[in-house]
Length: 280
Ligand SMILES: Nc1ncnc2c1ncn2[C@@H]1O[C@H](COP(=O)(O)OP(=O)(O)O)[C@@H](O)[C@H]1O
Ligand SMILES: [Mg+2]
Image (cartoon, rainbow, N blue to C red; front, top):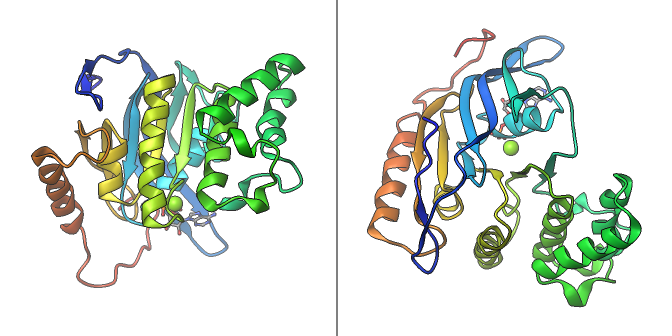
């Protein structure tokens, strides 16, 4: 592993991405302690995200995708294994990792679009003038110029997600963490948002770790896809994807089928009880 292939962009031009490892998730086991039992969310999950990657975590509901993202964000700690960013162990949340969630209520309702995007910049000490410029710039990048002074409750779900993306990106984190950001949108808006995200990536070249349970979305959005098995999540495969957007090539369908078979093979025929910790 650790190899990044050039991938095609919309106009067919091949580009290389920087091949340095940015995020190292090293055999990470995550568990939750509840009153009466230990829940193992992921078991020895191992992957590396390189600079410029659009890295997707794909798997069925409950396989530990959100838990992995939370661990990378520094909200929860692995019971086994390690997470490193630029070689440094992750010890807690930090401005180098920003998260965009699925929920439409992640914006501050009493602040305008502009104020929402500005807030984390000012909180982290970016001078007023530069912060305002950056906020305006990223609001424009997500196409919301005209809604700069609007309040969240006046925006559609897709627009709210655009603001959340602009807000996270304006702080220029090392890595953007996205937990099913389009899952609550209608199908058409979701499609549009996937394309816009790719355009933004083409424009800004950021690194992202993107969580989804949709095989199609994984192929559209990702250049690399980590397929996780159901509860507890374990790595089934790591795949390269070259689709970039909605263009449905033969390769797209083949990859879709391959992942489908992979995930379908996991379906339990009878209810599975989790009794033991730390082992699947
Ligand atoms: N706070 C928690 N306490 C106990 N169990 C949890 C908690 N959060 C998640 N889990 C369990 O961990 C497993 C993985 O959850 P999650 O990471 O949310 O999966 P996904 O995002 O893939 O749907 C599930 O079995 C879930 O019930
Ligand atoms: Mg989740």
